[in-house]
Image (cartoon, rainbow, N blue to C red):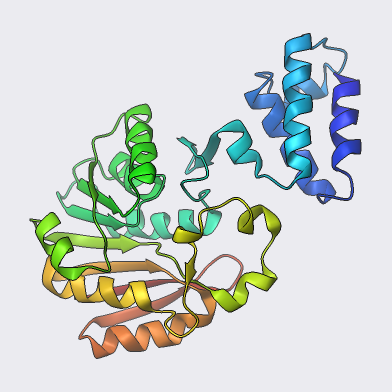
Length: 283
């Protein structure tokens, strides 16, 4: 065990910060060796099988190219729930957990509500809300058939029933036909990174995560928010709630757009790092 851990540290030194290497080691030990940190830290003389050693060495080689550990292992955790992930879906982010936290805190789990998650990807938002707001009926849409297949498997694995629908939020007539009911809550973490921001991004995101779920044109950063807000005017029930995860640089203009479209009690909420990250608005 000691030699294997040393190999991981030595191979990844200079590619990842020490804190991230520690996290990688923890994930490898948990998911490949079925060992929790307290187990391998006090039992460094444990002998790993040749098969496990070979698997770990293969993982390390892929990590050298900055491939995300979640894609390599095929699993990411969100709200302490396991989610299958692959390059057809984004890896769930901590700030999206804050968005889900807000929705759960705002809404009584004993009151039945229809919830719509737009751009569901892995299904992490929809599935977690269905898990925590048990009386709700959660719908989740995405343009990508591959993403929806992942989300459906995640719903099964997490033992919840979510209604998944393939549609394109940028085609209003199609969306109206595909969504026959109205909703009490619409939530979305849509593409919001501007093309000009690519130069600031890490390779592990740019080279491996789906650009379809990440980027918007520089000249129209509110593309998805505008379409979702328009849909909400028709599909949200009176006093229904709209929740967005947003680009930290676009908070004020997104709030202004919602105000112009008739939404009220609009709140711009900072994430734990102090950046504008969540918008909450009422129809």
